[in-house]
Amino acid sequence: MNHDFAASSQGDQQESGQTEFITVAKVVKTQGRIGEVAATLLTDFPERFATRKKLFALGHAGASKAKPGGPKFSSAEQTVQRRELQLEEHWFHKGMVVFKFAGVDSITDAETLIGCEIQIPSSERAELATGEIYVSDLVGCTVTNAGREIGKVRDVQFSGGEAPLLVVLGEKEYLVPFAAAYLESVDVEHKRLNMKLPEGMLELDAPLTAEEKDRQHKKPG
Image (cartoon, rainbow, N blue to C red):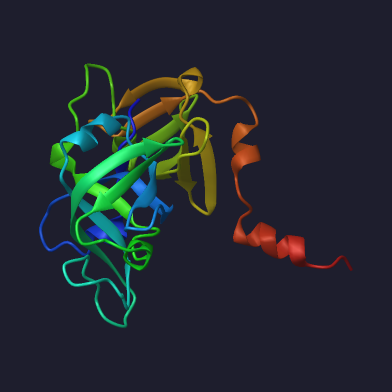
């Protein structure tokens, strides 16, 4: 299993061409005083930042105080857009990656990148060994549990442990850990993911439906 998170569909709608993007990091805070930002890694190949000089930031754009030459935002209106950034340098710090981009030279500039997904074109993903897969390729797969279809993978969420899958089935959503212990087979080409989950796991991870929430808020009598 390899991380390189798929770009959100909302961001892809901003792209006029057919290029698909992959998220490899997400900016969470500023770092330092000359425009550096710290980002959570969402790739299993961080060493490739050494040769990647062109990256893309996907995020909400609004009024920006960035200096000329820095990232460009649309004016007042908040929209999702992707923009190109030139990576000047990077280093790793406390489990995160710190980026310094050209034209982002102050804390104020850096603040405009907080929350942005740092992306690359999917064509630039590292080649995998036989039998390995990218987690992002699981999005859209039909999931079965012990032979019973339970839904499709809508999204992938990363946490401190295994990467769970957010599976949708009607009004129900399930967080299912993508762990070898529960995995029977994966067919990315045909979008099939066959699992055998512990009894009761789906009931534990399923959020309340609208009907259940309504029933929960009604007072007895």
